[in-house]
Structure formats: structure tokens, C-alpha cells
Amino acid sequence: MTPEKRRPLTRLQFARLALEQDGKCACCSERLDFLGRRKIVDEHLHPIADHLEGAPDPNRMDNRALYCVDCAKQKTRKEAPARAKSKRYAEGRTQADKRKAAGGSRIKSRGFDKSRSRRLPTKKDRERVLRGEK
Image (tube, rainbow, N blue to C red; front, side, top):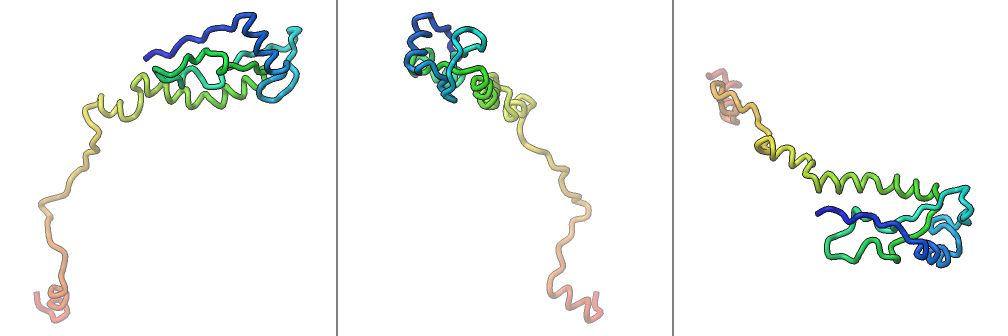
């Protein structure tokens, strides 16, 4: 399953989100700068990578929000490990997959030295030694 591609917002959708959020960042509630000095980032609230097949479209408007650059960077940094893990699983690059490809997952032991097999001493053996018998 390939994840759905991110679709950019149209100007109308961007304006609608800005009005819904009162011109503030959805994360920190700072005033967004629409004059272009600081970039405004359109973020998915639930990442596209986490989107399950058959679930509603991840690009729908109720899954989108406008963030300031600092908040967008923090959100991306926080989501990066989970995104990398799901990518590893999707590509079959887990430790279990590597062992399976190598021919099995059993750890081989070196075994026991069978030439030196002997039983453990019992109470009777100990008593014989104490009496001087062999």
C-alpha cells in the first residue's frame, strides 16, 4: 500500500482555514504573519503516513491546520520516529524480516560435551566419600 500523496491547499481552502483559526497558529495561538515575513505551514493533524486504507481521505479539510514554522518543525520532529518505524515495517526492513531472510531465527548453541557426561553426586555418594569408600 502506497500512502496517498499530499495535496496542496487551494487559495480558497487556505483562506477558509485562516478564518476558522482567527488568523492564529493552530498549535501555539500566535498571530500568523500573512505578509510573508514568516512562512505559514499547512499541516495534517493526523499524518498521511498513518492513514489506513479504507479510512476517510487524509487530505480532507478537518484534518488540516495552519501552523507557524516553529510549531511545524516541532510537530515534524516529534512524528519522525513513528513515521520511520512505519516505513521500515512497510518495506520489510525489521529485525525479524532480516532473520527470516537469513534462513531462520533460531540461535544455535554450541551444545554439550557428551564425552564428559556424568551425573551429579547424590546424598549416598556424599556419605560414601565421608566414610572413605569409593
